[in-house]
Length: 100
Image (cartoon, rainbow, N blue to C red):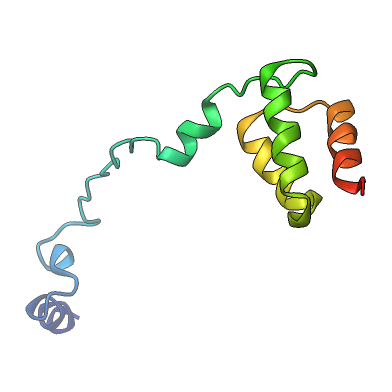
């Protein structure tokens, strides 16, 4: 039995056993808290509400009418990155896209 332990210790396996220790002493290393990424920072930003009759609404209407060919999914994704949009305004935007 001692021979087995001695051979394990020679090759770096079980050195703590050969030294007479029961369990190896391992230090728990806590990883430092990482800085939030740019994506996380954008999620924490407060988006402005899109309201009808404002300058932003006029810009959105101009964007939607100029880019109808992109489709409602792409236009909606672009707008939700920049504004909080109520369900009623989403319906208005969908009407603008489907109008001929």
